[in-house]
Image 1 (cartoon, rainbow, N blue to C red):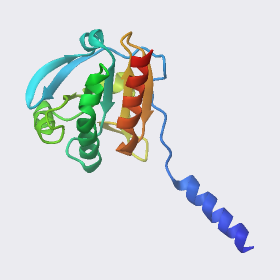
Image 2 (tube, rainbow, N blue to C red; image 1 turned 45 degrees about the horizontal axis):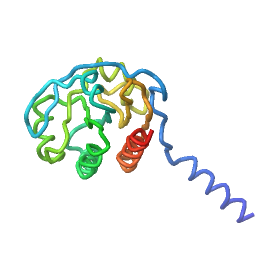
Image 3 (cartoon, one colour; image 1 turned 30 degrees about the horizontal axis):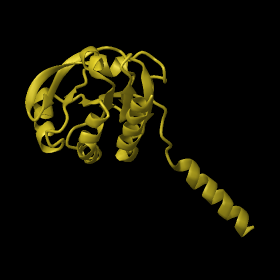
Image 4 (cartoon, rainbow, N blue to C red; image 1 turned 90 degrees about the vertical axis):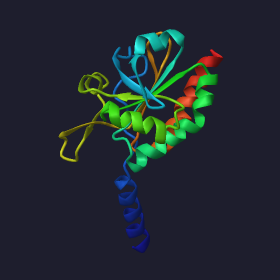
Amino acid sequence: MKRNLFGLAMAAAILAIPAAAPADLPIGARAPQFVTQGALGGTVFNFNLARALRKGPVVLYFYPKSFTDGCTIEARMFAEKAQAFKAAGATLIGLSADTIQVQQDFSRKECSSKFPVGVATPAIIGSYDVHLKKPDGAQTGRSSRTSYVIARDGRVVLAYTDMNPGEHVTRTLAAVQALRRR
């Protein structure tokens, strides 16, 4: 009897752990094109996805809000590996719904001026279908934590959504390096 109760308790605990949700753009889909304001080391510029793709693959990662714990951890992890992304020929950019003024500060302080962050407008969040939702299903106006690797031809080769920032850098870097070996 005790064994059955323990087994049921373990099954319930496992089911309560949130799993990584699938990203909303499937592998092989064409990434929606966009232009937005970005900041690198505090300097504002216009980021154009089509132009960036002419140079090679793009690692596009959405995050909910600059200067929050998880987003700061993720930015620092990407900053630590920024040179490895560059060596693999990839352009790296993070996007959140924060203002360009917030992104200027975040790019200096948390991204260590190693890669840009940009403004995820409502249109960009909508086209990538990365709306962060409240438990009741209502949209927050922010994006989920979703990372994409977009190949030079504009197709998605990696899509990964998980609110835990732990695997985003590892997965996107591996995908970019695999593209390089093709």
